[in-house]
Length: 71
Image (tube, rainbow, N blue to C red; front, side, top):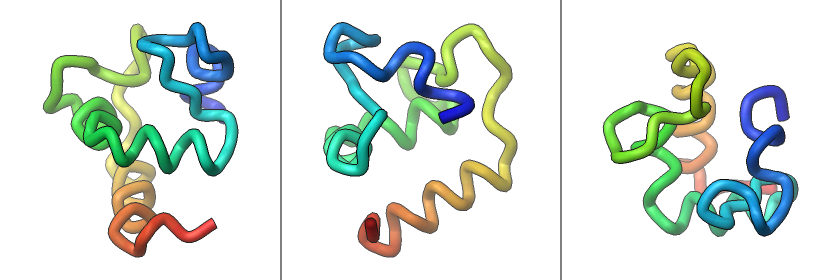
C-alpha cells in the first residue's frame, strides 16, 4: 500500500498493472516482472521515482512468493 498504490490501483495504472487486491498482486507476480522491478534488475525500477525498497521488505515479498503466494 505504501509504495505501490499511488500508481497501481486502477487498470489505467502503470502498464495496466493493478496491485490493490490479492488476485491482482498474484497476477502481477505471475507476469515475472514484479521481482525484477522491486530488485531493480529489470527494465522498470519500482517504486518509480522513489528509493528502492529496503532489503528486508524485498526479502519478505520474495518469501511470500516462494511460499506459493498464500492469501
